[in-house]
Image (cartoon, rainbow, N blue to C red; front, top):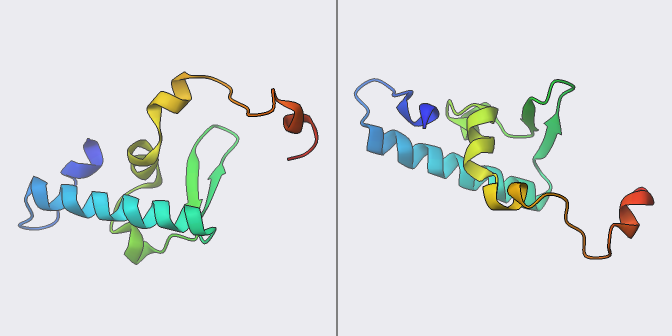
Length: 91
């Protein structure tokens, strides 16, 4: 993945990949706790608000998104546990 190859000085690809995995774990935990919020811009770009520069460790929002998104869930289309009833009531 491209963000895995943005190496720091004297860093191996394996070391960078481990750092990227750590960042995505921190991101996932922050999202689950509500400390980090995902925001999608008008052009579809994603940003994670609340993730500090130190926590990001040079990993872009787009890269973090690609690492954390559930591709299987996206390909399944819309999903609801109540046949979409609550989608129309501001939930």
